[in-house]
Length: 317
Image (cartoon, rainbow, N blue to C red; front, side, top):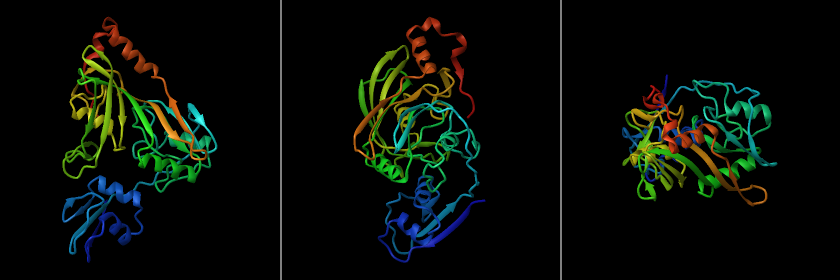
């Protein structure tokens, strides 16, 4: 059962996230940030941004979900390493692999595999070994893992300052026009479903995504997508917002999938960043996985698509 802490601000002008960190020192900064994002931290009954400035007499309610302890164990799961040095390792994550344990996915994750191969990885406040950023379960592609605490902080700073070049390949529904553009729309927790994100005019955080058309196919478009911010599910939410959802996206796609491919067509294919020790810029590329490459081949030759692959209703998530 969730615990609710209620606080009354004696003075004003202080940021709500800093105020809560001072008043409830057992809560980490990352947890407070997540509670704000999830709408579980409110002021006078309303969700707010972390930067909200309190006024004297404001009532701050903090709903702290019960935490299920998950013991992380090493598991011998194959990893495809594309780059490694003394500071970090970059893996090419396959689709369907969860990054770290959570309720419903207590083992068989990337974190379990990393712990087996690199037992001395730095662990963050939430018990995640070396994790600097994440990819969704059904998104494949390049992901950085820090091998030391200084490297983790250095890489996290690059992500925070927008210095990491992340590029995705996405196949979306419909004919995208114009051939390039920017989607600038704030993203926050979906008020109708706390597990989903949505474009939110109130309480959302700035989110910017650039796209470029690579290829028009019959009823679909292959895009190169660059998220300039790092919001949860950002690429998927933004593309659905402009009415071009990612093909195979069960959470944000259309109720009836026009083409059933078994997972979402989203691949983190390019990653550029500075090495923590030398400062040298590296650019890494992951080729499109065979399952997604086969989808493109079929769309380029529609006669190869079977009737069963068209117009299959979306499975319940």
